[in-house]
Amino acid sequence: MFSRNSHVRFADVTDGTSNTIAIGERGAFFTQTPWAGAVNFGTTRITPNAPVINPNVIEDAPTQTLAHIDIEMFNDPRADSEDFFSPHTGVGLFLFADGSVRSITTSLSLSTFQALCTRDGGEVVNSGDF
Image 1 (cartoon, rainbow, N blue to C red):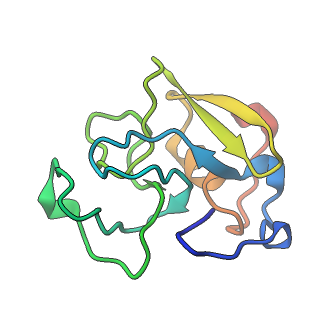
Image 2: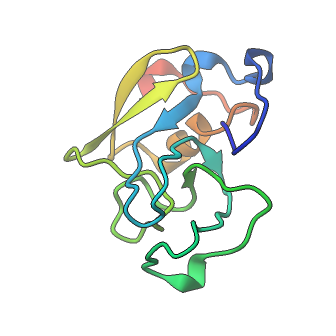
């Protein structure tokens, strides 16, 4: 939902604040940064001198994204270092744009998780889906 130095208003969350992830857990080890928001299919500029697992997936970007969802679920062993990550087994904690905090299971469908990570993608997500 956010990127560094962005200006997002509640009116910009057209998918609904209860269906939009604003902030989620993320491991800070690989990027040495506390940013943890939702950016769908983003690229990340890694913090200078931070350790990197796979340098082939790092790209320069005009903004430093917070965390992103790509083609893996959070906590997937194939995930990139800038993806969401939770130390909790089987679940991650996410703050939604409506102010609620919910735990999301890693068994959630990837398409539903991707939809929750957009603020204006037009996807329909029912509360029973997650």
